[in-house]
Length: 260
Image (cartoon, rainbow, N blue to C red; front, side):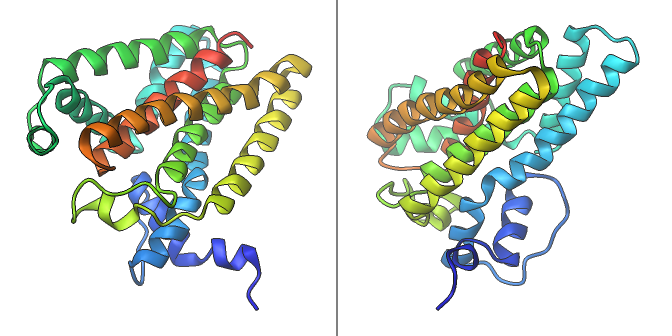
């Protein structure tokens, strides 16, 4: 009998997670629902790659004498470059689709367009402003950005759990929806929260050690609320919905970490 680690993990699953959620050029030998399940379960690992890179940007800019605002702006830029801006694009598309107030099929059609409407522009602007401001204010910026970015990908794990349908019969949503077992999502969440607490403790003591897992929980709760609304309006998840969940949960987690 295979161990839980083997059922959750797997080389192709991790490679697919990195391929879908970062710009790191990795190749998957095969892509199917089983590999998608492993990939979405391991999504926080891909987030760790992006988060650590952003943390390095914050640390290096600080050592070079840059102010916290500039360092935060460059770190957020790094996360955008390392993801090709796909999650921000998804956020903008979802904002346009939901903001239109149209029925599900028309809203989905709006989301597939290549242009960005006013709802998308406003949402992107406000989200990026909040992320930069919150990160600039965070006492332990390297930990804050890492915890927030990993939380964003953990939100994807939960959005792909059993019981959450795809909004379309094709596309990324159809590939990954309903793949993640709830017990696996719970296990990964526990690991992320413990790691966040340890990182906070090492960075600044008890207060950030407590607030780091609280930030993870806050990001997941906000993402869950958005997911519920999106599923109610659209009938399920799409790639754009997943991207929007990433950015929304990142923002919520940064807000909590900004008071650490």
